[in-house]
Image 1: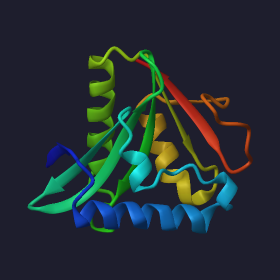
Image 2: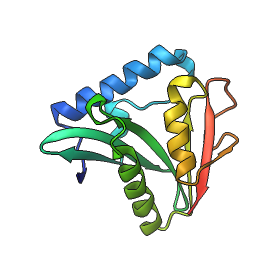
Image 3: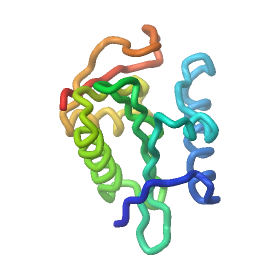
Image 4: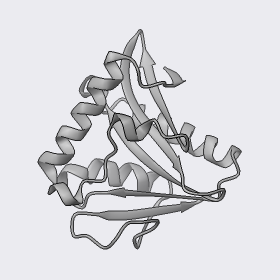
Length: 151
């Protein structure tokens, strides 16, 4: 598998991110969807990586730097063809290694409490994340589960 820093201009990543957004809006009320669209992911404080195998997009994930010490995992998504193949674990570890190399000491994330998000919560727990309260600009929301990890 090849992990690449992505410029978000390719049709494959655009389609995967749209699929991600569509699922988020089908799963949660609009006011509780915190997924970023393509233009929001192009902010200077966000890095997006994609995972490729044999020229096929397998997944994506992003790191949003809130400040010099704290970051947030965003837009973690595995393609349907890549589910249960370890893509998300490999990509998450890559993002955590990058964050630590950049000097970040704390990584947070927001995901959903619904069954749809159970695999995501299990992935994050496997990598040492624990549930916490809201962070950054988030507020308590019955459609959000907040998690954090100290690096």
